[in-house]
Amino acid sequence: MLIMCSTAFVLYGVQAGRLGATVGRGKRRSMCVRRKGEDETVGGGCGDGSTAVQGGWRAFDAKTGTPIDSMRELLRSKSVERADALLIGETHDDPVAHRLEEELLREAIELPGRKPVLSMESLETDVQLVLDEYLSGTIRESDFKNGARLPFNYDTDYKPLVEIAKENGVSVLAANAPRRYVSLARRVGREGLQAAISTEAQRFLPPLPYAGPSTKYREKFARTMAALMDGGKPLAPDMPVPDPPAGMLDSQSLWDASMAYSICSAVAKEKENNLKEQPLIVHIGGGFHVEQRLGIMEHIPNYDGNVQVATVIIKPGNLEKMPDPKGLKEAADFLVITDETVPRSY
Image (cartoon, rainbow, N blue to C red):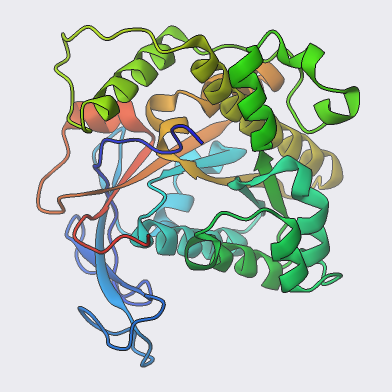
């Protein structure tokens, strides 16, 4: 994949314990993060004798700058109360983010009047049947893993989410485009994709042709790619950057459009089948697809203009440094900063 998360590392969130006992409003929170394959506890235990590292976080309502003390508080906010979908943009190797996502999903399951559905960027649409067979208990986990083309970090970072959903009867959505078609879009372009694949193959993708990137997204993508080519150093705001190859943008946009279409389809399905509970599609994806309300959120109105969305960005950063108020408002509805000193999951 090209850019599945942002290269700017700043995040916010706050709580301690299992995820733990709340510390103090606006103060640093800590949580237990289990580390596979370690024999000793690093930075504190989980209270049950299991291996752990200690991971802090701070969270804020981006509109007001008000600290958020727990995932429960975030989910019960007015922004999420109105939303049909909650887009969570993560840094993929952030273990604290993954544990927060697990806590958020558990809390979503307990929300009165809501029907949560877990949506995942890391699972591709053409493995939905395999995923459903595993969730229903029809096939073994080993067969699921063999058939679902799981990411290499599935066991450490995403398996807990799937297992929480399985244990609680929550549907899981394989939301992303199969990467073979993303690769094809890079070669033949957005306009050429429809002619290049069969009608049967098109059922795994959003309606073709999908929309191209916005000007703001194009500029952000170009600056991110230029920074990566320059060793990951942030570029000066006034530094000109060349346009990226059209094929790269077309493939990047296919990810965004596919996830947007999957989310809108899931909202429509839940509203049709469940008149008593409001759906809440909890989508886990890379920060680049969510930040600044670009990417996925820009494509959602193309498929259903009535779907309401709230956004959360979770990124590693300095817990002692307060976020810039302007940056808070621009990034998302909620910003979560996690401890950048915690070892990455890969």
